Amino acid sequence: MSTENLSRRNFIQQSAVATAGLISASSLAAIAASIDPKSAVKRRVAMVGTGHRGTSMWGVPVAKEFGDVIEFVGLCDKNPGRAETARKMLNVTCPLYTDFDKMMKEAKPDLLIVTTVDATHDQFIIKGMEMGADIITEKPMTTDESKCNAILEAERKTGKKVTVTFNYRYSPHRQKLYEILRAGTIGKVTSVDFHWYLDVKHGADYFRRWHRLRENSGSLWVHKASHHFDLLNWWLESEPQTVYAQASLDNYGKNGPFRSTNCRPCTFKDKCSFYYDMTKDKRLMALYADNEKFDGYLRDGCVYKEDINIFDKMAATIHYANGVNVAYSLTTYSPYEGYRIAFNGTKGRVEAWIKETGAMTLEPYDEIMISHNFGKIETIRVPQAEGHGGGDARLRDKIFRNPQAVDTFRQSAGSRDGAMAILVGIAARKSVDSGKPINIADLTELKPLAVKA
Image (cartoon, rainbow, N blue to C red; front, side, top):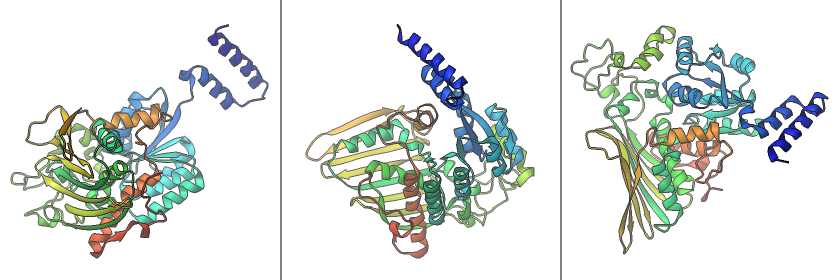
């Protein structure tokens, strides 16, 4: 007898038992799914925060590519117009909500995607878990140590899971760096030079939006740099111990020669190098300009607004529990976008200069250079890919298509990873404010590990 016939016979027998009331309908569904994966019950997904990031990273592509395994059952945003616009973009028919509790009670999602303003992540993550959902949250997980502790406690109490979406881990180039370091190619890593550059387009954009206020974003130490700190934690397979930092606001905000509320009505558009014509972006006009009447949010805010209270130039020294020292910097008004990184080891050095945008000619690949002490220099070329170096699609596939796939390169990030990434930024922010080095262990219950378990 064929395996197929045996499976069919078993399924019929199990169905008869279920009909007699001896097993549940959910158990029967599981049996059916084991025979035919297409028959598996779709995971119920809801999203809170339907702005550009939510719709572009976790909305449209997820609805389009994973409709056979997930179903959007609710979209929530404090701006009802933006929620309606998002639903049209996703091409779904799920209910819309401005009341988060109501959505959770009615939609009963298995997965909740949190893509709201950073400072509000904690309330939706915590309440989402308490109301029965596992969480997929955009980075940063949250913006201060108290909120971080509350999330960790809620995860323990509820038994639910928080996944932090560090897409950079999944790009082939950064994965190749991880492999080189794990192979011991340069011996024991002792120090790292890591310098990130945001250009005058992308970098300036953080000063137009809600990110410009520390109370919303935790500053770019947390919102942006947590991405970079997570990479360091992952590459080094260790956790940060102490941070000393300096930072200032030198280019944007109060430093501007003139200012307006936002770019569209500005009278200085002919002389302002940072003038941004949002009317040329139909997507942003639909999401934001068309819905300003609901909440007054200006997506094209002036980069010279005097209320800007985040830094635009940052530098930090980070000491890791395994003894590695890191020199890190972030500049937000560079002529090009990208970063330079170098790992110094007892047997050599690995370095890369990633140029993502700018006036220079871009090659269709990213290079990694390995210099061996007393030996040769090797160059490795990794093909470039769309979506944060190819990381976006691979991350979504892991979360929605293959959540049980073997995590060979430890790319999946949980709440501890999310915590350790933001704690570097929080410590850096506190160090700038106080002028003193900050111990990570003083911020939360988590004690830095020399080697990740």
